[in-house]
Length: 436
Image 1: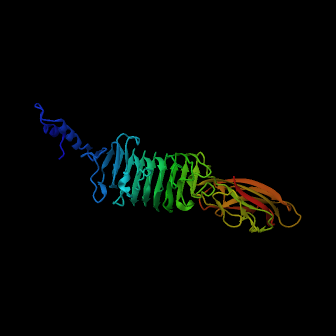
Image 2: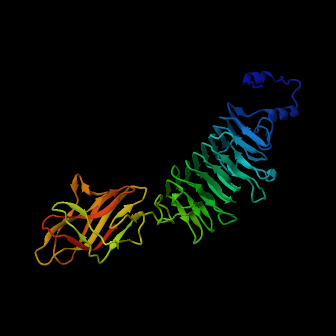
């Protein structure tokens, strides 16, 4: 029965004649529930009134919208079924003081499960573990279809991770990863995963596999963000491993201070040269993703037929143009056409260099303008077409122009020309279009 303070004081004898014994005081303290509203303090030894609910069928059910404050080191031998709105937090705010984990003898069970498929819960300030180094066979997670799972200032220490399947949102903020013994498997098609300021230690000191495995994720509604981390990867293991660039709709790896070895990787599965959907930005130890490259053709005799004065037409190629070997986020989209395939909007400066001549023999130079088309439309600035005119002789003349524009995913860049004077067709013998 819950009593307010006045009722509690009135329930005590006055003790003028020694009616309250030391044993009475001890029993009173142990039976008093340290609780405020829906907050319960959980203490070592699980004394009456300061504990999680008793397990039923091997599972401890935490009711919805309850807060559990961990005061010390709490080992459990049963899974915690977290209700929607649950919060499990450290009393001191430090994972060096307050911890929650599976006892070694608990067996091959997860510490956290959810019978409510849309449960959202938060864990803050704790050290979480399964004592896997000491021989425990349990794992941290066995979660299916949770809505929002949040970890703030948590130390994942000496544990086997387990799995989180089909979570809508997974946040890991300011968390430490120490002596993680196997992979956290994250699967789903709609999950947003955000890992901010991860601190990684102990990789290579007994790790059995990569730390976080995202190979079970699939686009199109998956976003991954890893930023502000600090890691020294000293083994053939990774902090995050993905299958390929299609694992997510968009991935940002930014602001991390990383020391990798020839074998150890912070982020494995995609590198900066493959990053169509993955952007590396501002990391120490990993170069930035850079959109670059172009197309090159040499020795062509293809004729660009002029339909009439003042009409833009694509420059004719002979089909031998190739994508430059350093190309990132660009692919060849057909004869003398360059497609931007990156997710991020790109400030593009197209450097168009070519040698061109008019057909026919003799005669004077004929003025011809050159430009770029984006999806068939001439590049313009403030409504004015960006182009440069040149006088073409009958012998090859080298021409170079830079044209700035902005590209979005799927935009196709094509070099074009326009005859301003004269009637003869044009042959562009050598051409290269590069992102600079």
